Image 1 (cartoon, one colour):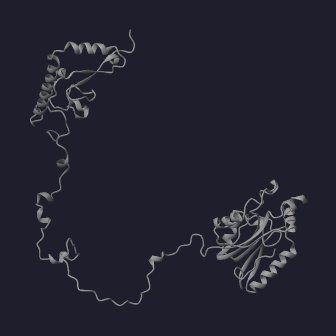
Image 2 (cartoon, helix red, strand yellow):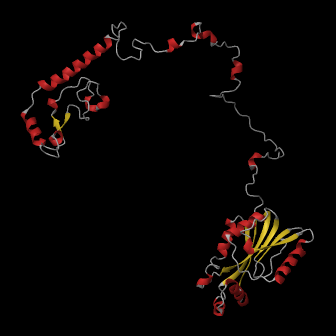
Length: 377
């Protein structure tokens, strides 16, 4: 199969990379090289490289205008992703790639197990692999079924010596020729955004005569020149608002908290206190004692009905009875009215501290076996 050297890919003065294989004859390689040289002329050049070395040797970056690979019979090798990446790297921006490869036919039924690896992808898979490798404008130039002689040459390269296999593979192997291009930019290239450029000034269009309109008064309009209208207005000087005492820098002793008094950090009164701190705790203690006495008196003076005692005794030995609800008539009255809301709303001296919230007028107490030891001695 002759290599592709069309005017779309190879032109006068181009630098071309010709990829050959060890299975190709020297005469075919020489003929392909001379054919490309006749197109590029004396100003161009043709370099040669072996297919099996592409993924292992460092190729020069952005060097060739065109790469021809797989075009010298027998075209028996698949181009892996690593090979395609190496070819894309050595192409110049906008350079072309001519690739020929055997693929499984769309009508292929069952391939021998020894050929599943070399014919594992179809034409669509090859086109997808080229796009993933960074090529654009991927075009199928030619796709035809391999002849019986070409299939026999392919089997020799693949190491299959059975003659009956060639006859069975007729119509199941195709030779596809694809052309592709590298994008017109290198990896990592930067370009200015289109809206950052100034548009060319267009010819001014004739201005239509508009009908006279009534000017409306602007509402809630703030202008940058509003301050110019009030230039004569007198403004208050900020420095005049400060007196001599405000300008004196305070000392560390003045900034420190006092040792005694309501604003001090001390929570206990001093001996022989004269600042008034001695009177405040005494008032708080009297309020706590009075509220506690009120709650205790209300709890102890009210008689307990017989039915409440019977209900309490009935639930005392039941494991399921977690709480006992004392009737409303037996509950002490709250002085603040927030006892039933919970600890977050109760006073510091509340007798309900630690108990759960309950309905107004009721008191919840732990009952049943909850107040008994788990082990009886």
